[in-house]
Image (cartoon, rainbow, N blue to C red; front, side):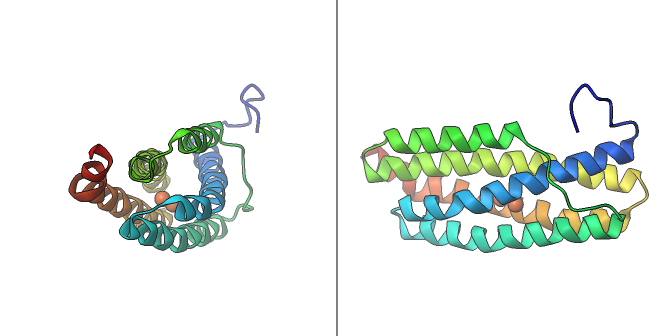
Length: 168
Ligand SMILES: [Fe+2]
Ligand SMILES: [Fe+2]
């Protein structure tokens, strides 16, 4: 669905397009997390990334469920935004030598990812409601809530441990 081909004519089209965008993004995140798990030093951070990898697989399954519920095919559309966020995370991580500083960099990168997901799911939930699909909204809301919880846990870990260790 190109930007200039005007394939998006209605809010419903836009909803489906955005669902395909987050579908692509979630798969990219699933593929990027193993590397982040490997690079993390703090055991709580490592474990947190591991848990979120499992949650991310669940997010993909829920998005597929919404495609089914809405009667459209589960397709991906390129999402240059998540590609950029993940590419930058990869570059920065490659430039950090100190393991504690690397943990701080990984949290910062992960929070950029979570915030991207939160903005997409926040929008999708509202559009689903507007389209009379409260059923789809409630499935998408479950993903939104898990992204928010992950973001909060990352903040806690950064503030209580990782940033202190990185500053030493
Ligand atoms: Fe997710
Ligand atoms: Fe996430």
